[in-house]
Length: 379
Image (cartoon, rainbow, N blue to C red; front, side, top):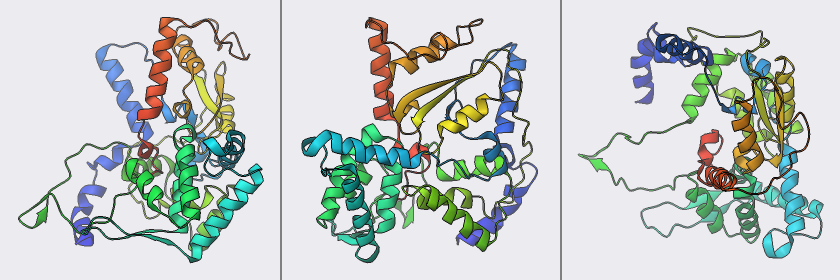
């Protein structure tokens, strides 16, 4: 049925008027320029996250679909779990051990055991099937938790301790709570006339949307099986915590043959009327600090604001400094600097505005959908 539908829709998908030809970054940028011109807007203030100015992909790798160094700092984030779990002690970290290396060893032993002995979790609902927690299931949860360490690391520790005891309930509860996994069920609560009703909920940053944009920007992926195997092995060797899960990033473009109407491949270098502010965490699991520095080097007067935090984008770690500097940067026309130029931000006395900013940044972190990363699904 799926193949028949795809074959029937193929002319629409690949035709000149297909919407999929206009989802590239270049098309979106062109639309924005057109809107500005039609509305008589001279300049645009633009804030971008998730691969843009807050959390930076490497422009060259993104535009060529190579994706070789995006996990450069992922193991640093994983090491932070071992380190801070140990520092927190057994009261605050359920997976505590006397040293960080012992915590790491326990996790590796747990993963190894799941390869041969997955955990079956019976369902309390007679209409639902049992859940099976495998090596891959846990690897995906670990990879997802690297995006939001403050939010997910404490829960991850509880899950690991439970899995050590061959109890998978905590795992199912966590992934279900964050929408990473839908429970298997035999029920069809929204069926009418024997047929499922269509999906009506609006969704953002779905897997297919990410693939459409990424493959339009980066071009075709024509790896042979042997070439992709080499790529995956390289990724896993360089990023032990998340390499296996994220090898599929490049694979998303296998077989993608829709050519975008507009595609920009560089050069990624110019003088901008107002400097660009790049924001990067000290250790970001998918958009490393090195990417922000590499991009900034090609835009004179641009500035890299480094947040001493772990996880993906500044949303992973609420920061009054980042919130304040992001707002002030757009107001500076002559200084072209952050906080006076390259120093360490100093906390000022709290005022009402600071409190509002602090509450807002914390709320963003707590309410940001983990699935919007594109890698939090399918656990």
